[in-house]
Length: 239
Image (cartoon, rainbow, N blue to C red; front, side, top):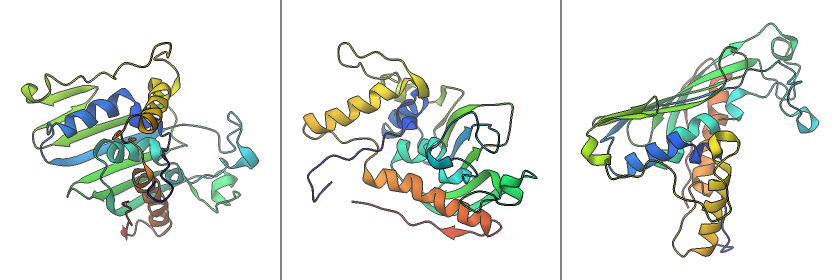
């Protein structure tokens, strides 16, 4: 950060999932052309009281889905380092008292929310966060541009643009294993952070601005859902 001279990094796992790394490198190489549309999805079915996962003072109970937007929104913000400009969001309600009677700390009636964004590069994005839709669990992202798209872990476009790109993740320091949860992203987040401290000129992927542009947009998405899908301006941050 500028005033302190310290390094800040949000350890958002989506940034170093294999999909996001591939899309980021393709984007930076110009392989998408003009990016027109991005999708991000985070499905985490759970009972309304989140009995299967403990949470400090029950913070997960009734949590508005778009208050946890990083695993979906990150497939745009951590790929392009752009931001969202407007949002309209639709929430899905439930008969369970946690939602119907809003028996949660947030007064939240929605178990799932789908946000439709305008993006800073003139495109659009659909970002879904779902607690109450069983049948699938996971995080997925896709990018569609005028020169190609990335979906199903494959790039479809001009292969000459990306043939020299290493779409797999870079090597880790000796003794650090490439494994773990969230797509094996944990060691890469740590490596990225330490490099920013030790290597002059290295910038962390999810710095203060990217962290805020990823998360604050989710707050406005939930507010839009509470307003029946009203389109709201989303503030953006740069440092």
